[in-house]
Amino acid sequence: MTLKLKDQEFLGEGTCALSEIVTKHGRSLTLNLHDIHPRLGGHRNLGTLTVHAEETIASKSIIEMKFRCSRLENKDLFSKSDPFLRISRIVDSGVCIPLCKTEVVDNNLNPTWKQVCLSMQQFGSKDRPLVIECFDFKQWKACSYWQTPKVGGRPRKNLRKKSGINFVIPPSSHRGREMLSKGKLFMDHFCEKEQSSFLDYISSGFELNFIVAVDFTASNKDPRRSDSLHYMGDQLNSYQNAIMQVGEVIQFYDADKRFPAWGFGGMIGGAVSHCFNMDRSHRTATGSEDEGLSGSEVEGVEGIMSAYSIALHKASDLPLSILIVGVGNADFQQMEILDADNGQPLREELPGQFLTYMRSKGIKPLSPSNSKPQAKLLI
Image 1 (spheres, helix red, strand yellow):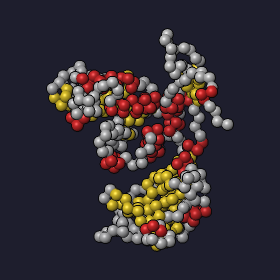
Image 2 (cartoon, rainbow, N blue to C red):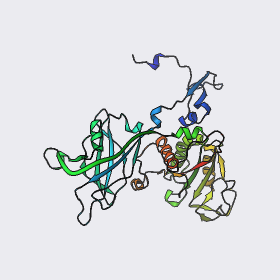
Image 3 (tube, rainbow, N blue to C red):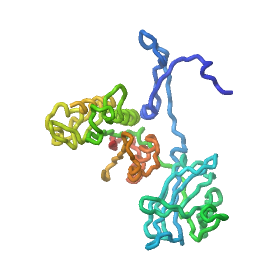
Image 4 (cartoon, rainbow, N blue to C red):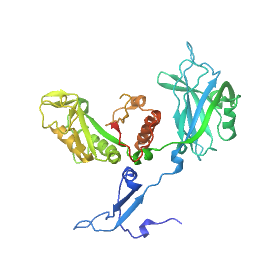
């Protein structure tokens, strides 16, 4: 029986971000309920609602796989092919959903790829078939020329055997029946294991320091023009929207909610500055290139918005994750080179980057007596 909300009595509403819940002690958050449209005289007290977040065991399980191929057909004229694999999962509707890609192995017809790790949430059921395709990498474009049959259940065991599995030439590529290729795929390693999750690190005391950098160069057009990305009108402009949408998710991972806010390409004191603190740019005529980073933080997302408004009117081996937000309607297709995650949402992308760094360095969640290191995030 479907519940019809229009027939139910409204008792109140409360809103929050998921990150606000999972960073609370005990992963519980109590919200004050209020009217959708408050009447004159202020908000009525409609009680409270407590929300508790619980992490599933599956979110901590990962699948490790290592693949290699032999005797691939050469597709290059003057050299050998540069193959890589794309692994996809078949959903109930029969559609293939890409999960990940391996690195490209240059000039090699018998490639061995680095280990691939998938979460159980990505992998789905261990009995659900996978599709593994092999591509030849050419000038920023991937040209498909081999495919495997579905790999699931017993076929996955066949991959572990010395015989491997033949690649398949799809019927559409030669106007006939499906044919086997001479190239073969082997799985040298398959393992299911449990690892610490993103929430394990956050719960044990790790924090993310959110840093904002805003582009004030002339490519954004004069802020006084309505077609400028910095135009201050009746609605939030493109930069304000980007700050709000990213900041409102990330801010709860930083306990003191103090964020460095910087700009580049703006006129400060009559000269172009390529690095200035937005909050202090209205108080100095020389910019902040020589002032260092001390005292350069603002309070919360609201502080970032205020500093941005004020400024407008007058990577290494460190744990640094760069989230690039394309602002405006320009062509950002080439940013795919910098972004290898197939457009995953921020709630998936950021924890994944964090866990990749921590696991590569062998860093475990903290015990209660440890201090709190920080991972810095820059957009």
